[in-house]
Length: 124
Image 1 (tube, helix red, strand yellow):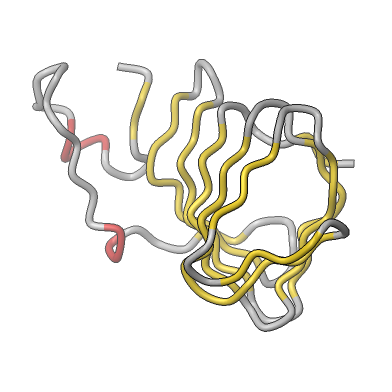
Image 2 (image 1 turned 180 degrees about the vertical axis):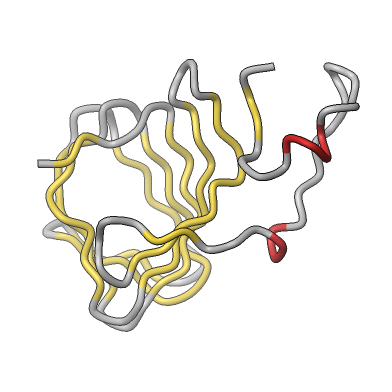
């Protein structure tokens, strides 16, 4: 199966192809990114297509630099807020961006965001 949760291969290896994959998110380590103050937990990914579900933690003042959404991107802000040139999405709210959209995003007061990507972003 090409779809997996990084770090969970051994727990999921014995499951049947159509079995549910349960993930204890608090057991997954936060992974540093190349962006200061931004860490992620990859909850699910399909390396062959780029499909991903990612939990992102942004420290207060952290910025995700200029990037393009190669395919549809969806974000549900669980804590804090995300701000870009078009507006702000606050805790409990959701934003989606069409393929080809381009922006930078910052978290003035920090943020915890659940993101769904059909393909990884392209950074500039």
